[in-house]
Length: 267
Length: 269
Ligand SMILES: Nc1ncnc2c1ncn2[C@@H]1O[C@H](COP(=O)(O)OP(=O)(O)OP(=O)(O)O)[C@@H](O)[C@H]1O
Ligand SMILES: [Mg+2]
Figure 1 (cartoon, helix red, strand yellow):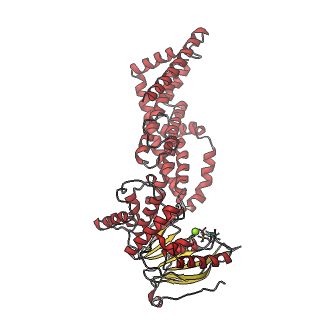
Figure 2: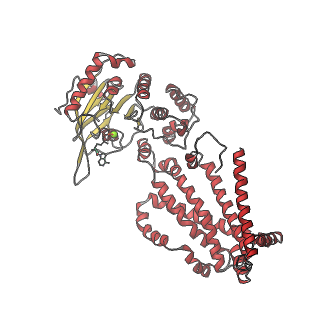
Figure 3: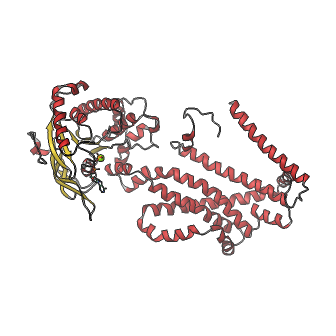
């Protein structure tokens, strides 16, 4: 217990020390704030943005784009991944296209997506979905295919239908892979949304960064970066929380723990 | 050498044997075919416990897969109660070398897998499963998950699962191969007890000569490349057999005879 507490205070002390050094250096070396703002300036910008309610509106826009894009990309990835894993014919025809797409940096498509789908919500959702799609699709295919042959034989020996083999064996067996894919997809969706906002948008944190850049408000940009990383972390922990509930039988992290009975660990 | 040494064919075999294997050939691969099984013929009577021993690679698992309907024979056929096996059937229970439990199912849910697949629900099947779990000494572990069980306990869940849907035939592929010697002896004794209660027809595959002689009414000895039945031994010890039966002279004689045949064909293990 005390070990955990000292661990936490050590971490906080480390961060505080880093911020202090940063603050001191910017003051001592007289770094102009449009190059590198001091932490105090960043926190002031953050406070101003939040207290006036300006950030809140843009946070909601970006969050909404990200979640919609994630939902769309994840749905498509699960459906297509399943089709690819289960059908040789689908794999034969679709796989070359996927390999081509996979090699391409998806963010390079963002300008075209904005041209095609406009400055509003749609282009951001499409961009987020596109970036989120691939890691999850690949994991879905790998997960569905990673089934042990004895387990398949067991199901077949019971004269199980294809549907039963899928729902009772393949799907639960693939879930650890699928959740790993969902974790990545969630963070990728945020990236996709921000990139599309950079290209052209009427609202959102990405657009806010762009407009602050034109007024050399670097402290403001840093404050938004802070918000973005907080959003990323919280979205990711939502997925992890769901994973914990669904995948109660699969605890890969516990493999590293010295004893499986102790619960008061710090990670 | 490779002639089938049929000691005594049971009187009722000609009627309707539980398992019938006729001139079974299985080859793998087309350009350089491996003959896994070569002209195998034998019967298993209803309620009989038959053990198959043989060295690694002599086609024991292949034989089991054909009997379970998981693999089509190259030539010949196998039948269950006179019906030719062409695909998996639900009146067979299979126990694999590893427990093959699903980690997302509790002990009870794993044991009930065949019932779920077949669509058996209701209190009767649940109480039967509970009774079987009690029989193998797993009472109180119903809600545990496989990762919380020892290897021997997991294998016992696998055995219960093979019995839950009340199949008439039980196929077991080296079910205790991964266990330590002590646990293995205990499992042998328990399997005998279960068999005496359930009276299934059992085909039991093993590497261990002693295990085969201890458990079986009859032992088939197979030799590899190509897989053939080299010897058939009837074991007549009264049941239930105590573990100490392995120390008797007759037991030693059976083991020695089987070992001789295996040694002559290149040895076991
Ligand atoms: N799917 C397969 N494709 C090609 N060859 C196979 C296949 N399965 C088995 N064989 C070959 O058939 C022969 C018999 O294999 P089998 O698994 O039946 O042996 P076994 O007696 O069960 O051995 P073990 O005791 O090690 O389990 C072996 O020579 C093996 O290489
Ligand atoms: Mg085998």
